Image (cartoon, rainbow, N blue to C red):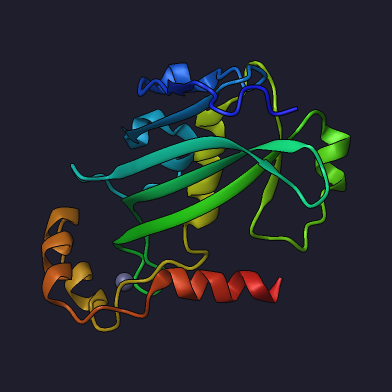
Length: 195
Ligand SMILES: [Zn+2]
């Protein structure tokens, strides 16, 4: 079966529009990385409370073939996300900087029914449907939205400074010297576990 163990790896485009249609039905794997500004992610941009120059998300994607227990090799995908944007602080209603750093793993199926049948207890692996025009940009955007905190807040004690009329960039600079809040990723993970 394993006549061609070394599959050619294609480099993913970095141009956002080109990421809307990736052919996942070829016997090839993909790797690539890039940066998406808020303007490239319209559904994410809707959530933005303010804009600053550094807002946006670096992404890195790698696909590979791997066996599920006792089955055929399946296409899987690793997605890493790192970036920032400004959301509305739910304490003072001023823009606050939110940073995310996430890593997700996906497994591809031939159709919706097979993907739906994939056991969701295995939350380390999210099922997706493979296609010749896979919307990778849409998937990255979905994951950014899922990674954002449900209740964004400034770090403890930083709301007052924000409401004194500081702009988004000033808040950014103050963030360097303020005590780091609890890791938002751990908070998010704990929230997800309660579901
Ligand atoms: Zn606040």
